[in-house]
Picture 1 (cartoon, rainbow, N blue to C red):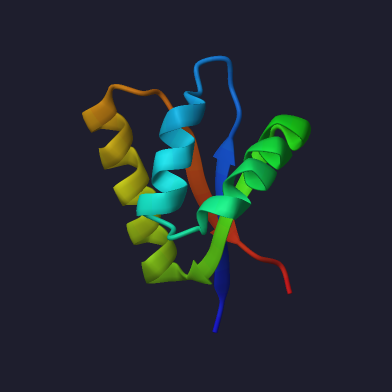
Picture 2: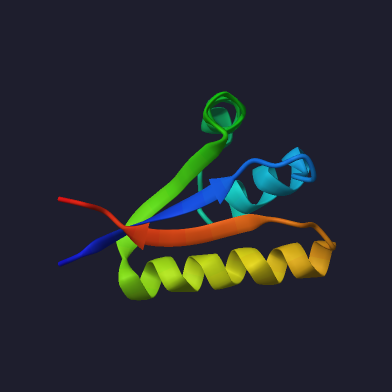
Length: 84
């Protein structure tokens, strides 16, 4: 089964509160791991949010974009196949 990584790119408009919210609500990341993930986002310029089969990755990216639109936040989020 092919897997896809969901990538959130850091940019000057990225709202850290929004990222924290979607990590908890959409990706079900435990609260105590959020700060580590946010640090990785800032350090690397991107964050691999999760690695999932195609349909699940696609759904999560759509959910991210809908949440961003609802919160009026600009994000750059996509998914790509993981090279085995």
